[in-house]
Image 1: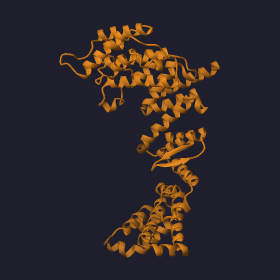
Image 2: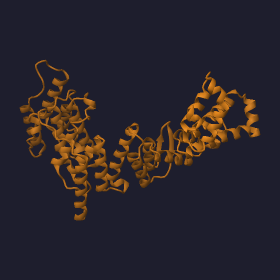
Image 3: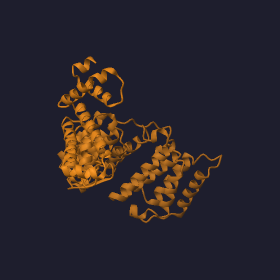
Length: 429
């Protein structure tokens, strides 16, 4: 009570909200007029009070719309009384939005995009999609990473489907997309928005990795991969792996370093919080390598070698669905020839991997999977059949016993990234 008497904004808001509820509190009843007056005066300086004032006015408007007959509605529209009441409510929401009330901004976005419930013929009067985008920008700048992510997608493609199936078209603008994705990646309110922060970081990494957007840049790519590693974003480990595997963006090829980043995905929380076996994680890495090769057409021999390597690792780690073995079967049956731009056919190896698949999918009690010696033998056979260098992968000998390298500390990675970028810059690449 004392806080209200001092016109503390939070106390005013609590009392005003309580007044709107059915209450038998004698103090509230005696102060109702004073409380609502205090709410109106405090609304000029406090976002929460400003929003409540608009919200209570909106409730009265909704009640008027519900109670009015069609004839009364037409009469009210004709006289201008209803329009005045509607615009008063919207004006109050605008006042609250100017004080950075996100719920008020949401209401205004609904109004501008035609999602606000008004009688037919009135809703269209207030639709203004361009202004709706401007209010989204305000919301994103206040730390709403989800809105920033959607704005990034809108400007990156020039069109986007926003929440609520709102399909909007605009002008493609890569720099504007980057601006809002960076906003979402760095200027978010709290951990609640992390599910949107991560895709913002991932999108920035992809934008800076590709020529199609006209901004491919090694320094920026490494910067956002570094941010992504702090947040344990899977795509950032893959991005660094592909960077060094193929020497993308002018970086020096380093297959060992590439493998280091791929192998980080076998640790941490990447195995579906521990519910997915490591063999399935290794299989997914193999599929990522295959997909990347199909989409970007890098050196197919390098891609093929690492694709086979990770499929074999998946089998060694006990991938329990047989997907890795059947993928190798399909490879040697020639089903991936287009992906790797090679003519691959080897009936003997295809048959051996089919047998492994059958045993995995119809388990035999005494069979616990191929031994490390069998897998090493198959690996050599695969590499010879494909005309690839024979690699003695120690991982296959005892994959579960090999300690995984720890993820580099963020600071160390950032320093290495900066050193790499500077070295490339000095070399004139």
